Length: 151
Image 1 (tube, rainbow, N blue to C red):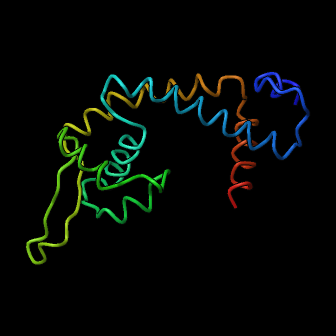
Image 2: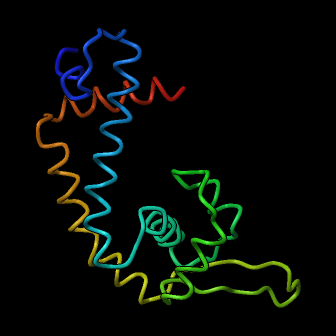
């Protein structure tokens, strides 16, 4: 806890619960910054990257905006705006139902798949660097603890 107090430049002691929440916020910010650094050269935000991975996971099938929103990590994101940016970059395409023109679905393009294929090893390497101080057992334990917190 002393280490966290040093990071925060705090002179007063804090509870374990507060220290845990602050540590999670702190590491979340650090991880986001690290990943964003890798995505920036490809003109992608973390949220856009997440949408592209959701689209790739469809294995060629189109998906509607609501289903994309449900699968997103950050549910507060404006999915329509994110998809519009991907459409503009030609990383995704809009498919309009012939029977019901109000039904619109989104699919990843070959360009989008190509960008993800280039990013996969970069992001994987970055994830390895982020977690390099933890062994397999510790990673498993951390995942379990985070899942426990999430419930």
